[in-house]
Length: 175
Image (spheres, rainbow, N blue to C red):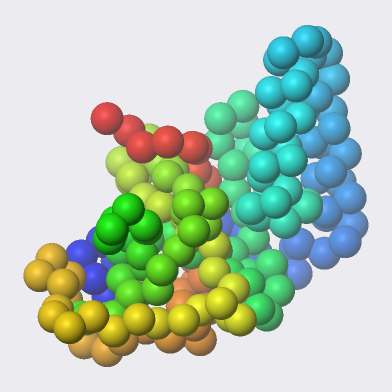
C-alpha cells in the first residue's frame, strides 16, 4: 500500500483460525473474566463485546495482559488492515487509497494501536467489500504519494501479508 505511512505487518494466520481455535480462544476470553468483580468485570465484558464486534468472535487473542493479535481476513468480504494512511476530512476519518482518492470511514472502523517493541504507532481499519466506496477529490493530497490507487482487492492482499507477520498490538498510540 502506498502513501506516507504505508502499512505495518500484523499477525494471524490462515488455517490456524479454524473453529477449534475460535472455541479455545473464546474459552480463554471467558477465563480472563474469572476473578473480576464489580466495575472491573463490567469493563472486561464491555471490552470483550467491543473486540468481538470489531475483530469477529474468536478472531483475536491476547498474547499478554496488554497485547493481542488477530486474523486480518475474517472472511472474503471483510478485512482489517494496519495503516497510517488515515486523515480526518470535515470531521470524518478517511482512508487514503490514491493521490486524490479516499474511502470515508465511520469512527468505529478505525482503532489506534501501537507496538512498543517495534516502535510502531498505527491504525487498524476494518473494511467491508460492499461498503468500499472510493471518493475522488478535486486535488491531490500533498502529504501522500501513490504509484497506483488501491482497491479492495489490493488491500485484501496487504491484509493477507500482514496476517503472516504475527505482529502483536496494544490499544492507543505511544507518546
